[in-house]
Every structure is written in structure tokens, then in C-alpha cells.
Amino acid sequence: MESCQLTGGEKMTTPNVKVYSGNLCPYCTAAKRLLDSKGVKYEEINVDTDPTMRAEMEKLSQRTSVPQIFIGDTHVGGFDDLAELNREGKLNDMLSI
Image (cartoon, rainbow, N blue to C red; front, side, top):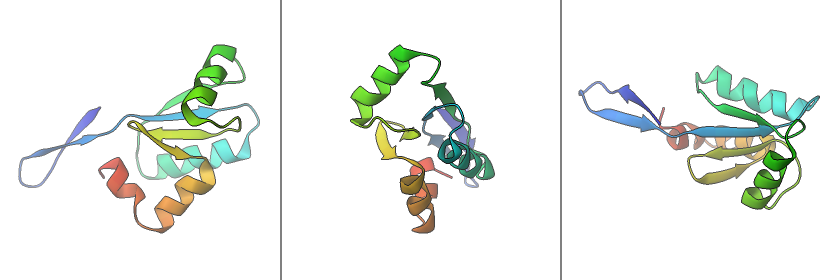
């Protein structure tokens, strides 16, 4: 987790963000662009190059498609879910930004 300084001197912790992605995946690209636009650092895990990571993703998310996005311990879902959270104004709160 990263810390960022708030105006009152207190620190807010930004949760770890993981994006399980695949090669040639337009929804993966869209999810990463959305996170990039918010200045969020994330760990990208390409499941096409590592079968053990695909198995981990499927176990954690109960889904087989990419992207699968986690913010902290919360499974957000795919790009559509991430974009919906953003439209609803909930994503910034989840990201502590």
C-alpha cells in the first residue's frame, strides 16, 4: 500500500490494485487506461503467459475472463464493473483518492 499526504497532515493509504490481464484484450487496455487516468499504480498480471496465475485468478474471482480487477481484497470484476463504479462516483473512494 502507498501513503499519500492529506491537507491536514494525516495520511491516507491507497490500496494495492491488481489487474489480471491477457494479450490482445481491449477490455484490459480500457481498464488500465482508466486506472492510469486516475494516476493509480497497479500490478498487472498477464495470465496468458503464466498458467499458474490464470489458475490463481480463477480461484480468487470465480471467473475465467480477463480483465479481473482487485482493489485491496475486494474483487471489483471486469472493466464494465470498474467503469460502472467510476460512473457512480464510487471508484475514487475505493481507491482512496
